[in-house]
Amino acid sequence: MDATAEEIARLPGGGGMRESPEGGHLEFPCNGCGATLSFAPGAQALACAHCGHKEEIPQSKEGVVEHSFEDYRRAKATGWGTETKTYDCRGCGAKTTVEASAAAFTCPFCASPQVDPTPDQDRLRPESVLPFAVEKNRVLDRFKAWVSSLWFRPNALKKLATLDAIRGVYIPHWTYDSATHSFWDAQAGYHYYVDETYRDAQGKTQTRRVQKTRWERVSGTHDAFFDDVLVHASRGVQKGLMSEIYPFDTKTLAAYDPRFLAGWAAEDYQREMPDCWPEAKSYIDSRIRSAITSKIPGDTHRDLSVRTSFFNRTWKLCLLPVFVASYRYGGKVWPCLVNGQTGEVAGEAPVSWAKIGALVATIAAVLIIVLKLASG
Image 1: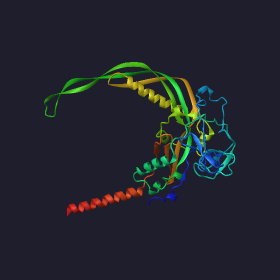
Image 2: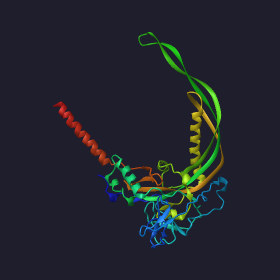
Image 3: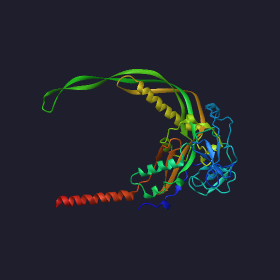
Image 4: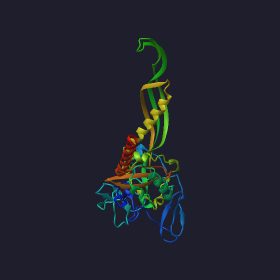
């Protein structure tokens, strides 16, 4: 039997989120009526849902700066630009930063109230942000379409396709730039064909055309520049699932401004820049190898060896918009992510064995009827 909607406990995504006491976001009062303003996706402004007042957020790229690797440990702006509290969750280990005015706190990742206050850490402040561009209603449509496309899934999953089930979260990312110079060598194979004679099963002499390969040693160099290679710094989002909603257009990054976070959650980075570099390097290496492979002459190749040097490596810390809908079923958390810039959807969902069992039973019943008709 499928679980009910109440048995599927939705979990807000991401460890280390910056939250207000109620909704998990920064709050900015409306100058018109005093209500809380929220960032309006695509409008580049704070908007009041009560009186319609809007406050434009000036766009600037001056703060979107690339830093050299050697500059990582030097002093930079820290924190979120406002007074905060930090909590450690005893349930899942998430580290969450909230407004200093928060009187009570529950972990946004596992909904556990077992949290302990901890001294604030001097975490690097993001210098750039890619604002949400997709409205939540459109995301709900994409989420519903994704749920409807699933086969043999619990019925209660469809009941979670509501606005309340989806939460907008800015996910921290490191971006990496690097110039590269690679030297490669391999054996290039050139196919040629020869005619061979053989005896068939009846002992007759036959002729067949056989492919052969001539191998030659080849080598060369390859130069490339990589811009804004993304590696997410979250521990609340799966690496593979996050990559499924790429790409993000980082050319539209804006200088960090706390107002972009109004009405939205933001996760603190949990992985340091040097620790994430190997992932970026692995991606770069694979792209270089693919490019070199296309340059090797001949019909095939083997024993490709690539040696790459990296120059002028730089990084920056940015926040990218993601809608998160996580839910618990069968004792496991199942996540769904939606790209807050493009609307691309990726997720995982449980299998309803009850539905599979019902289908198998139906097929078996049909076969029995068919066999009886055939034998009669």
